[in-house]
Length: 198
Image (cartoon, rainbow, N blue to C red):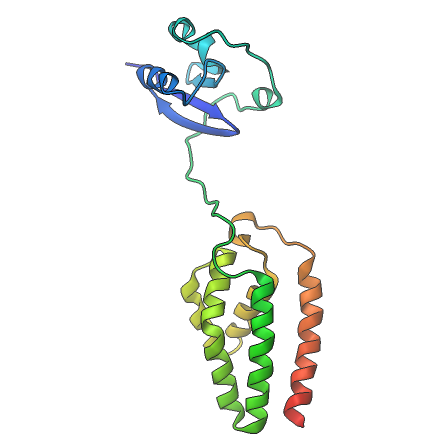
């Protein structure tokens, strides 16, 4: 049975590869003799040291120890697909906040001039597309935007759109902006009440 090898490249583990596949990748310039490789039998070590035949085929390269070499796990783990997404998909938090303020102020004016239910439904309808873009930016399903029509649940969806940073579903990290946004929302709430009373 032929040994299976794993490549350790920039903090990720790729593979398994056969010896012939490693030689092909080396010849194509995708890996070097100094690229770390491991198998079930050995800890990560430079490709040229693990397979002496490769050392003869590739130009001699200086092998230097780095922090990445020292911090690698002793056994390879199966490679997992990356959940990372490119930033910039969907709508950013600031753009959504501006649209939200304009729509809420407009809906408040319509609610004061007409029927409050019509103003609320029109406001939610105008927010449907921006909410779907913002949910995509957060990393959630854009079709969840329809939840804004559900009482109480819609408030939580809007709050997430206003507070959570881009790619939150992938990073699970908050920044300092939510506190500022919540204070702004409280002020916006009082402004909307003042508009609807007059």
